[in-house]
Image (tube, rainbow, N blue to C red):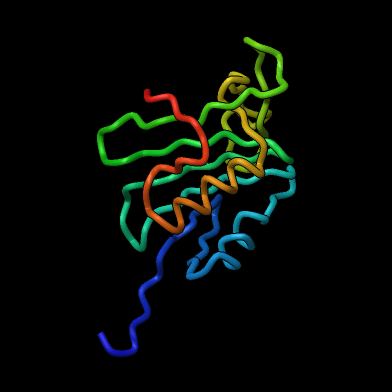
Amino acid sequence: MFGHQRVPVRVDGCRQTWHVADEESLDAALAWRDDRGGGMFWLTPDEEQYPALALRVSADLADVHYFPRDGHPGFRCLGGHGMTEGGLTTLAYQGCDPATGEQNPNEFVVSFEKAHAAALEFFRTKQMSAVVSWFEL
């Protein structure tokens, strides 16, 4: 269509949406933090629902889920490096449930840097990132 620019990725957050057309705008969207120091981001190609990459961020930690299609329970990014084995990490951001923060097993918690790398690869390929390891649910 003449005059219509296709947007590669939509990033939905808590009461906020970014239309991301380049890596710089992806970086800006993922750098946003709420008043709790966190953020929740749901990345999808254009206006599609799948595949999707979900990031829940609290300070410099995150957990990442990849959903290839409707009805698939998804994959969780494996992490836990330098964390207590069998321990839990609380991620707090607007929209978390409970409001005090969501506890996540350390094995699924990664640095924001790693989560960002997975999001960047998803932006480029619209597929599950190969820069991290995954656990299929």
